[in-house]
Image 1 (cartoon, protein in one colour):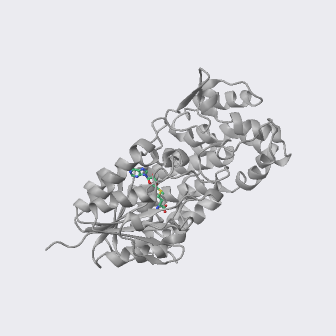
Image 2: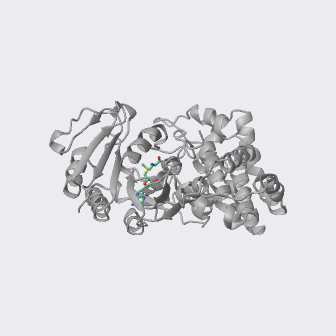
Image 3: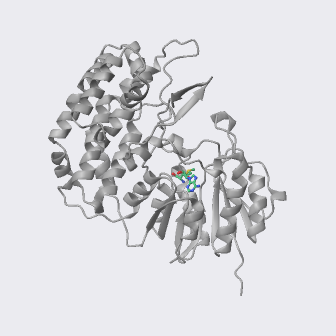
Length: 440
Ligand SMILES: C[S@@+](CC[C@H](N)C(=O)[O-])C[C@H]1O[C@@H](n2cnc3c(N)ncnc32)[C@H](O)[C@@H]1O
């Protein structure tokens, strides 16, 4: 079913709930109206809705727009375009980049072959060439890092052409994988026409998401190599064998084919990057329903997916720092400076942000369907920043009808007031359906 399509390993992805969400949205949306997916994330809801309606996909993150475009837009590609791409990227620059990184690539490969946990740990903890350039930390691999860094400079490859290898090689990806990502990225910018670029980029984002060497397949932090006593954990080796040896070129080709084969229709879809308020104000009049799936915990998506954002923007970002006991260090996760801080994740700002969401949607005469995933202690998820009760009470200030539907039981609870909300559904996903009576 090509309309149920997984692009990224994404926290809170609604992939499992697509039929339920589509069903409820179609119930309140006129046949030829547009639908806005306001916090599109991995794009799976936009993709599903694009089957029957024109969709406006919005998100604050640039990678989300790339993915939404690849899912919604029609691309014109020759049958042999993919084969040509793989031929084109075999350039002198590709060979030089592989050669410059070869000391680190060989060191890591040997460490995996020989199950050398010390070296694998050192690579995870100190392996970023860019961080080494800033901090000059001494470690078992500092000579290697120093040589690679020097050669990159000599070959004039110390800018965007080595972005992913320099920043994240060894840490989030193996050095070999990171170099292959850089080679593909350079190829996309050099050989792919602007019209087709987002399809090629989306396939690279999906590849990066599949290979990343972390526990949750996100980029919130590299694998913690040691236990609380400082002993190296076996995870270091097991994950290295599982993730760091995945063949990037092969996987990327598979993703390209999957994206290329997606069925598309003729609806005039739109994608936007920006804050939800700004996007809501720019929606075309044809949009009659807004689906909103904002973050509900203090975890900023910009921290979990910063590597995907850097891959998309290709902008050599400054790395953020942390100060502990008076000494300042580059952040462990090698985060971008000035990452987006979502008001939905900040206790003092969240209710204000939700109020704006309800107000702007109601004022423009649109329906709002808001997803809510209740707190599940067993999954060790973080508590929600706002409660269901708070949301319902704000919703009722702006909408005549506020209903809560549970995805778990598919039971239709007609709850028109927060007073009647049963706090029974602890695990099941909820949809708050807000509509206004039509005025004469
Ligand atoms: C729960 S995720 C959405 C998941 C999506 N429904 C899916 O199935 O993949 C929340 C999204 O909200 C975006 N976001 C957070 N704050 C935002 C803001 N102020 N404006 C627009 N988007 C925002 C994040 O980048 C993230 O992609």
